[in-house]
Amino acid sequence: MAKRDPEKTRRLRTAVRYLVEQGGLVKGNQATLARHFHVSRQRVNQIVREERHRIGGGPSVEGA
Image 1 (cartoon, one colour):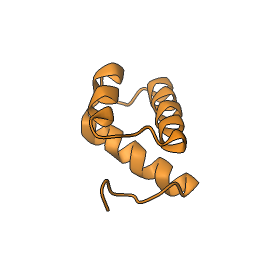
Image 2: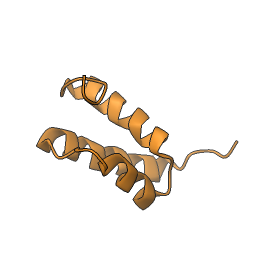
Image 3: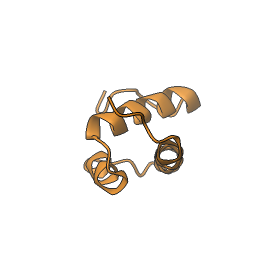
């Protein structure tokens, strides 16, 4: 398994944190972020869940 790039993960977390705080993480944005950062949508979803849990910014599951 390839090792994850820590710099890419840091930039992705920054983008996700901004979108979560601004309420801009709407349907389709995770797929767009995944394409932009060249990671899987599942990886983006994992980071979104972690960031929401970290800052307490809403439900950990979309639509819940």
